[in-house]
Length: 188
Image 1 (tube, one colour):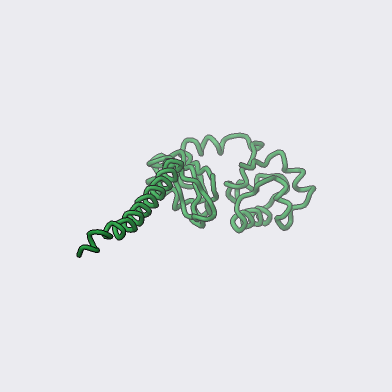
Image 2: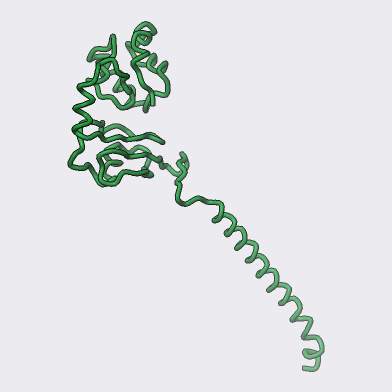
């Protein structure tokens, strides 16, 4: 017992060192977690191929227009549903609901009035080939039903066109055809 009183402090010293080590390690991990959380921006989701999400902007005649984070591989129809669906004024034929979403895509749902004005406009307006239906694509010079279907199919299989020149990859579209319609094509 006398030995314990005399040398007991030697047992206490290693326990104090060990406890100090654990408290110091905990403080460092807390600081690391705090610095990680302060650098994140929770209001702006960042799309990446790692998390399988894309960010799309749904505008026009939907109940809740806004920016939505969507899973890769989903369709325009899913984005419209997330936005609360169509309003009463929406022209449901103004967009392709079956089109696959792309990152940073803008989905514009027109009203019935806007669609009727658009259909009355001059035929020399540009055709947005990444959003246009087969009928609209046929308005391009040198494009009939067969080539329009091929353009539409290529777009659905490979995503939207990134440049006008990418249309050359569609079977049946050559340089001469592209040159004749180049001025009437709109790429996002």
